[in-house]
Amino acid sequence: IKLIGLNGNLPLAEKTAEVLGFPLIKTSIKHFSDGEINININETVRGDNVYVIQSIQDPVNENLMELLIIIDALRRASAHKINVVVPYMAYARADRKTKAREPITAKLVANMIEEAGADRVIALDLHASQIQGFFDIPVDHLRAVSILAKYFLDEGVKDNVVIVSPDHSGTNMARKFAEFFDAPIAIVDQRGSHYDNAVHDIIGDVTGATAIIVDDIIDTGVRLSYSTKSLLNAGAKHVYAAATHALLSKNATDLLNTEPIEQIVVTDSIIHEDGRYPNNMVRLSVD
Ligand code: R5P
Image (cartoon, rainbow, N blue to C red; front, side, top):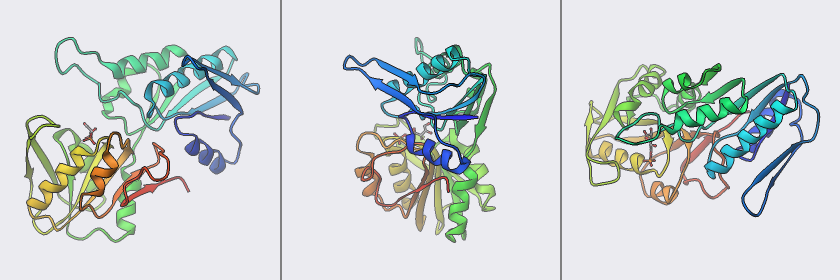
């Protein structure tokens, strides 16, 4: 087995190598001034089972291209199996046409990874489970709910808990999360567009409860922000949040710092520089 880490999440690749007890293969990745990327793998991979760890995070298109280029290089270097570990897969939210003439970019990205020569994909909390079917190669779809839920249970956040999905499409994730607490779920029901002055009602009873909002992605933080406000308006006593992927784009950090959320617990599927995280964000990582 050989392990390669790319720029999308090098710290996670390094930690994984440490846990497994063997080093990352040395690669040189050059980004030229015109934007082109060149990658050299500095040791033989002939006949090897290679695992490439790459989060397709910001800068999304560069990280995607790095991944495609290394897959191509590995294929041409006669690697036996090319396993692609994608802790965060960008474009997964574009998984269907919501209006005429829209692309389905999640399918396009799946095609590109497969066409480049990947043999297997290992992904964490794809935005929708059916994205597994966009690939014709095996996909191991891992879930973060158990480690996120364990954090709250270990911290003693388990009494009078209601698990909240911030939209209708996240109810399955909320339901799975709720099983760890034997707790009921509630849903933030939004009427109107996400970024406009939509109306948000809570389906379910959160009066006096400790609400834990569970989502797959925190991007701009807008959904988490209005969900928190709606829950407190509906009578929740405390609000916590858990999410797998902390994208934290735009001014998410400043926005979330203004919200009275006790803690926001995320995984290290995406790594930012220190200082980019909201004050109350806890990042769970591989031990
Ligand atoms: C959308 O379907 C996802 O599950 C998240 O709820 C969404 O990406 C969060 O976006 P934002 O943080 O920009 O409100």
